[in-house]
Amino acid sequence: MALFDKLGSLMDNVADKTQVLAETSKLNSRINEENNRISALKLSISNHILGLFDKGEIEDEQLTSLCEQVKSSLGIIAELQAEIARLKG
Image 1 (cartoon, rainbow, N blue to C red):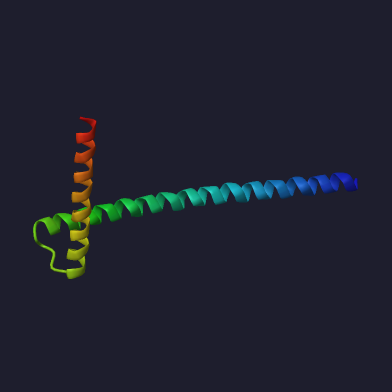
Image 2: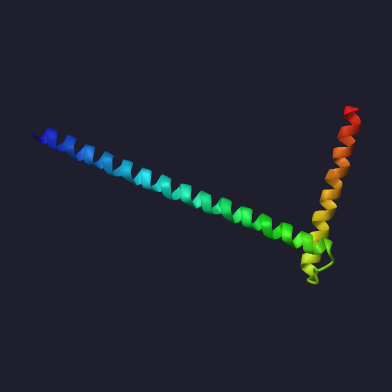
């Protein structure tokens, strides 16, 4: 009987750990969903701020500097893409 008691205890332990893993996985999935939502919201905020910058409506010096850096990088990307297009003929 001791063997069956140990086996039963082992099975209960495995079932408990499986349930914890399943719940943890669900919670991690929800965390990832919220992180994705935050990333999308941050992108929307960034696009809105860049739009205001393009209209000359940004007065904050730090935001202006950051927007100028983004615009500079976008210009560099455009130049590099043009160079790739020229190389491909």
